[in-house]
Amino acid sequence: MKRIFSLFLLLTFAVVMKAQQAAMPTIIVFPADSWMNDHGFMKTFNNQGETEYIPKYNEAFVNTREMGSVIQSIQKVFEERKFEHEDLQSILKDMKRERAEELANAADGYEAEKNAMDELMQQARPDIRVDVDYAVQMVGPRKNISYTIKAVDAYTSEQVSSVEGTISMTMDPTDLALRKAVAGNCDDFCDRIIEYYKDLRDNGRKIVVVFRSAPSAGINFIKDEIGDDGDTYDEFLYSWVKKHAVNQACKKGRKTAKMVEFKAVRIPFFDESGEPIEAEDWAKGVRKAFKAETGFKVSKGQGNTLGRVNFLVE
Image (cartoon, rainbow, N blue to C red):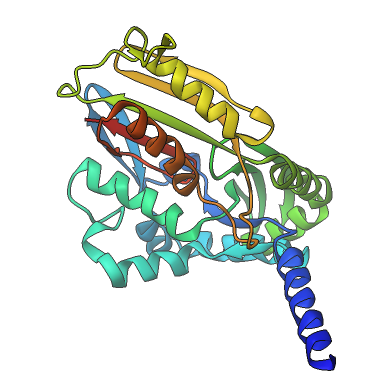
């Protein structure tokens, strides 16, 4: 009996510890795109007539040591408030060792570089991305530092919290000055992040699910019907996604004959064992249901990210 009771206590303790660890969001701190562009660390691509930008983070860290120090200082502020965090530089080093040819600032071709950036986020799997932007104006031996720090949902890019300000006439190193400023203005900023994260845990994480039709499939999502009940393909998919979303939270997005999109789909945050549920894992259910109902082959599409799942009907 004692052994059973002891085992029960250990299991209870493990569950409590896991819950406590998950009570705070995991963040990752990035240089903001605006900072990267201002300092010449953006590569541009022509993507079917549209200019797209790929940040060259490794180059930024190698050529501008100050940014690395700034990120470490900002991370310290979050650590002091018990946030979990992933370190961008460490992840970049791991990626370089594992797949050097596909690093965002070393790969050949737009798709390879874009995929590498998606892979970076897939490997880190943060809840919140924190973007840091700052500019320094020297005034003799002193400096004025203007800064903006934004927190966004790593899955949806939805802005969660922000703080900005100006540090006047300081002689502190930039990283120390920013750490002091952020620490002094961080309470509301962090409270908004924690409140947003609590909403995700209570009401489900937000993702986007997209179905596209390959030319070989020959289907029209908004006109062709499934079975005898008169539902079109897009209606069938919407019904399934809404039924299985947390509190049936789901919004219809773009819809054409060859594509249907569902936005703000709330999925359970944890599975029965207390592990986080990934977007792709949850969305396998609708893929299998569509395949079973129609007989079409459904494969994973291109461009999947942490919070966006694409399927191709073939």
